[in-house]
Structures are given as structure tokens and as C-alpha cells.
Image 1 (cartoon, rainbow, N blue to C red):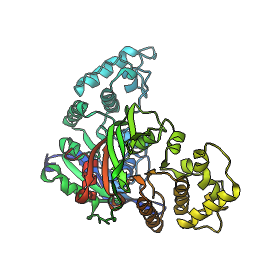
Image 2: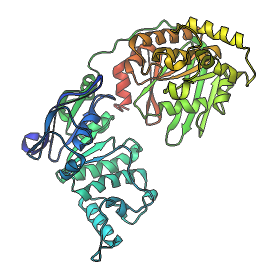
Image 3: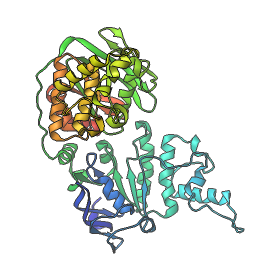
Image 4: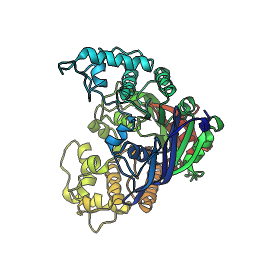
Length: 499
């Protein structure tokens, strides 16, 4: 679609938004035309959501202006945004499951009869008019909890027509849908576009963007990097725009023991993880990448026995060690460093030595440890991995983030865990502390530990991992090896390009 013949309905100029220490949007320009689907892409934290919140009126930009239907605004509020016909359909469906389709459509403005009483017949009639207008087939009298996932998403989209939508923002509309039902949703979106509605389409799936979009704008680090006609670009160009530069690959010296391995077989949990299998050898760091919500953390929780699995076995050196619970996992030599160390990994009000010895206490089935021996062991390990503290009696909450993370590592080292699952091991710590964590991981691999590392930091993923498994929609869609372990490939498969 050539925009020269279309009416411009939205123009954002010089939008800037900062938070303490973070520039979320940096002098961003963006526009939208009538009857166009303009896609927004970028890595997590690139600035997409901030722009959408400014357009919906939920936050106010620091600088810049908005031109909407030939009127200029310094900022919007939610009521003003809605009055202009700007509507957002969020990734998570916001429906009332126990009410009917028709009631959900008009929940903010239920239809009444001449006597001013609620009229289901009028709601049903008006809902049918909306469905006919955008050519969809839903039963207005059906309870929402009886709808399929794609029908619920279509209902969320149809509902905005009760507020006379002119600009529709779709935030990851297919994120919770199976691939086979996407075409049904895409047909609805095309019907809406044909009515002249301008659509801002946010997705991490590049294949989807080329299917649905007219133009694409790439955000990186709060900046608009490029806006391109999709018919004149390709996936590689978009990925390069998102990355900005080639990621360096820091090759680790191989520590792998070829004939001894951990096998993860057919792990599944309906709606979260779909039949994931891979193997990790002793001394190997196996990285797991993918977008937030791809099933990475859910997989880790299943392997460690936190959540109940539907299927799955853990085979180590030919023996079945599938844990029935986290305590069982600990007893079998498996450790999990969780993403939120302060919530799940540490007793922040307790001293260092108590935190380090906790897992060993569990592993010893609750028997008492000798206090002197306990402190001696923990002091030795704290010194080994350079926890910066005047004393192991120091309360953990008084340590830096990097040193807190070392305490978590230390407890699994003391417990002599052979298999370590590290979920975001460097999140929230500074660059210097990250290097120390990488060195610690490398030392553990030299000790022939099996390490599974989950991280959203793609440069970290390619720098530290021997091999990389890419998760998408609960499945492991690709395992990258050798020269293929690049940030470009991580992003390509995580976004759904060519797979």
C-alpha cells in the first residue's frame, strides 16, 4: 500500500520519555495512515510499549507532540484517547469469563430498553451488527468461558467497535494462539483494515509481520532506527536493525566430556511447555534463549520439580533421576538458581553462612550440621569465589547484587550439585560482577558440572554458551552449534523467522 494516496491519521513527532537512569524514548517520530497496518518491532525494552502507553494516554511523554486527525496534542489522557477512537487489544485477554459474548462487548455501556432496564435482546442485536460489519461468526449469547482461544481474541478485537475504533493497537495478538488458528484471526484483522481503521501491530514474529503488515518500524534502545515498506525489505535487514551491530563471540575453551551427559526427554506441561528434548554433556554450558514468555523458565521449573509435568524424564549417565519435587531434585544433585534471587533464592535477613549452608542442610535430610564446621566450609567457599564481605556473618541484604548472586552460587557449590540450572544468572548486576559470574561458571564447567543457562541477554548467551537451544511458544525450535551460535541466529529463530 502506498501511503502517498492514504490519509495520515496519526503523527508523533520528537517523543521523549525518561525514567531515572533510563531513556525509554529518545526523540521518536512515528506515523500511521488510514487503512494501514504499521508493525512495531524491537527487542524487549526497545521502547515499543512506552510509545503505545503514550498513545493510549496512560503515561505522559516529557517532550514532543501528537497530531491525530489533524488536531495537535501535547499529551493524551485515557478518556481523550478513547474519544479519538484509539483502542488497544492487549496480549492478555481482558474478558469476564462468566458473562456472554454480547455482555462483554457492551460491558461499559450495557443496552437498555425504553424503561431503562438492561436489555439482553438489544445487546445481542447490536453485537450481531458489529459481527456483520467486520464479517465474523460469533454467537452473541455464548458464554465466554466456552469460547476457543482464537474466538476470545477475536471477541477482544470486535469489542473495540462498540467504541467506534479508528486506530487499533494490537499487542502480540497471536502470542497465546496455536499456529493453525492464526489464519482465522488474520482474516478478521484484514477485514478491520479494509474498513479504513489504522492498525499498529506489535509482534515478535517476523513471519507474521510480513504476512500482515504494510510498513515496519524498528525500535532499539528507545530510538526509532528505521521505517521501511515491508514489500521492499527482508528479515535479515530487520534483524540487523534490531541488533545494531554484530555480536562478538568470545570462545570458551572446551571443557566437554563427550561420553557423559544429561538427557532431558519429552518435557511437557499443557499450555506452557511442548515436548522439549535435548541433552547436555558434562563440562558443557548449554544456553537457552527465546523471548520472555517462550517457556524457558517454565521448562526449568518442570525439570527441577517445582511444577507438575504432564510428561518428561531426566536421564543422567543412563539412570532415571526425574525429580518428584525440589527437595528430591536437591537430593539427586540438581540445583536451580532462580530469576528472582531475593524472592526465591536467598534469605535476605539471614547471614551469608546460613544461606550458603541451607541446601546442604536439606540434602542431609535435616540432620544438624556442626556449627563450627559449617562456618568453616562456608568461609572457605566464600573466599574461593570472592564474595566481597568483611565476614560471613554479614546479613545478605547488605551485599551488592553481584555478591548476593555469588552467595546463591555458593550454596549449590557447597551442596556439590552436579547439574545447575541458572535462570538469568546476571540479571540486575553490574558489568564487573557479570564478568566474575562468567568466570565462576567457567570454573564450574572445568569441574565437569552440567550447566543449563537461561538468559534474555543475547550477547551473554552467545558469549558464554557452548550450544544454544531456542524456545518459542513452549517448544525448542532450534539448537545452534559452533559458528551458528550468533546473536543474529538467536534473534531469527526466537522471532519465528524461517521456522
